[in-house]
Length: 370
Image (cartoon, rainbow, N blue to C red):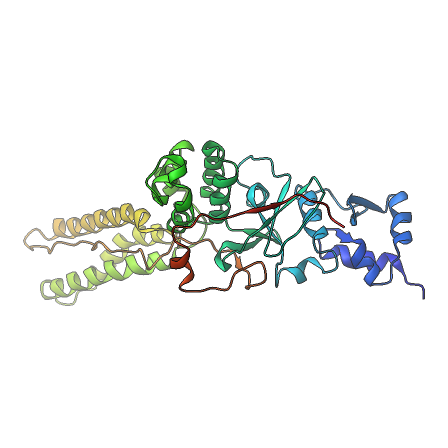
């Protein structure tokens, strides 16, 4: 039975970055001879064995990595594999997907829960179980989270300056990093770099220093992100509003219900509200502190301004109370979570305690593939 080849190939490529596999095409009735003919006349371009790019599709920076990943499970479509990622991209290849650092990504690290073997020079398999939180989807690819990637590179690369560059780029990226989780992931390697056993925080600080990561600059970068800080705005507005309510109640007796007070307060608060609307929602406690100080100063200026207009009235002290935002605004990446699969270990609440003190193991496979 003959099939119309072109629409099939175009449909396959349309949902896979312009790429397709020979196995996918064969499952839809397209023979290898059809593919070879189109490769010869330029309608297809072979990237790796069994993976093609549709002719006319622009070359993208991650195409080689995508082709390598697609070749590890060629029968399934890319989006189908995201539901249960049996192969997760890790190491320097994951850093490249995160657009962090400048470490050569090849050979591409592919993490699986099953034993795999290959002769291919562009792929290196590692057999390992991954926690669900350590796998994210970026650019349509299942990769280790930036925290897991940095920890793995400390183990695999060893050059902390290179790893520091990865962390520095990630810090300037779109998503915040969970430094507490990263410190825990670094704990098994602390003694290797001269720190007390399992002191991942000390190792993290060494990496940050090697990269010249400036906390002030990182804070400013967070503040300048376009996301509206709804949670932070609500906290500050609620605290300031309560203080102003108390002030207004005390002034009502002096002003006898005058509407002039409300107008003055609205005018004085306008710059504060405008500043609040630009704050990012995912800012840690350390980042919030200077803003609380700023708003405390603004509230004091408001108090002074009203007091100057009514010199005979003793104004109450206005302040924005210090607050602990550690649990309210967690510093987390907001990437798509990946369901548990054979490449991801089931979440066991006791697993972290039982594994504490054990070194992570990575099994490298370099033997022949049938």
